[in-house]
Image (cartoon, rainbow, N blue to C red):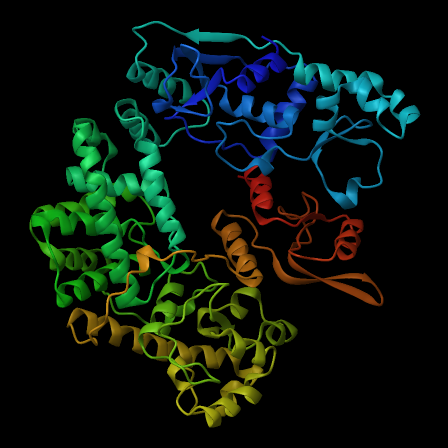
Length: 631
């Protein structure tokens, strides 16, 4: 069947997705490759369709209930969704994902390549044509409606090929049909089929089997995740399924779910949801870690559910404090950063053997030998460092005060729409000007948290000037941030490294005191706040933090982390500061220079383009570029 006819069937509500299918996961590079393959006449594979009874309980997308059957797409969803988006300019009814992946694709009539719209590059270049417009109108109508008819007539053959190859190509359709093709049989076919394509995780496969028995499962789980997201916590479906697995089986492996009755699975959701809320509320209230950006070691939460589930425990203050002492150490030392299943299995064995919280802490001590925090542990840099959440925790739970107002920061939240912001004690501009490297500038010991207004007031002022002012204005406020004040020489930029060393000592002392107070139940009693049911909490981060996190992400993936605030000389009289740059390419001297420029003026982007830089204005698109070309 021709591509255009298949899309008509989707509009006629004859095609949908089985609910156990994952959403749209393609990126722009994959979209370009599909368009290029079709244009050049390469094979792109066929479709596998399950023709079955029309039942909305296990379908995603609009179906016509007047029909007795519906065609559910088992293999080819990503390709078909992409083609629908390119040809129709919008997503089909069963779509779940980011439609930016297929919108604004352009084709160059001269070079015959596909690229996504870049205004500086394409705005005044007639060779670039909007793919969707050509596919919607057809080559002839596109030319007729253009104000450059004579120009485009020279390229009628290419425009025709673009239109015909992307809309009229016949795709082979293989159907799975018959009364014996039950939902569980089709799930098995689907899983086998996908083993060679976009690979499904163990969690995806486990959920597919659950959906075969209970089609509403995915929707119910998404409902829980969406509620938590509105409260400021973003978790993945697989994480929630891990929590449920631990609750139902006391084991960490998804394979254990095969032995679980579906009615038990249904009943488990409310209990697990309530336990997750309870744990988040305790972590937020007792530790101040109240949103996704500072909530590390997320896979410690399934373990905590397993511990609470044993004998249906209800913990007192002392037990919660001790359990959270264990939790903090899991993220400080990256306990669940590697092989989550196997480490979680080990810790669950401790719980199942009745060794309790003390057993979990002893397990940590055996693996670490020493749980004491040392000054050098604060040598990390950037918001991705393991000790970053600890710095936030200490600020909120140890009565740190705002430099200017003197208010306690305990009840202030981190984020774009609240009042607590990251503050560089030694301003970035000052340090870069004095030759410090990115990792040194963004050392954890140079971070603290203050209110937005105070942060704006300080701006790029030298610490030797602004710190003495606040020491006099709000006695004790500067010291409450573990900033050494006994030697004013430390506030000078030439003594920056000595300042960091002194502050790391103060931070380590404070961290150890707080952790020991949790272990010994010597912390102040706190009121437990219902963080898990807040509404409208934003996890947006400011531009500086986005750039820092991206640089850290590159480093984690074994690539150059780039140069933050890179100064690109345009001419003798003009320079442009680039947020993050790779002037010698992602791979030194082997690829083009790359620049990240967020919320920048078009004129500056144009100037950087003219210096032969590949400019990205969107971080996620840049990550897609990296994944497809370097990872």
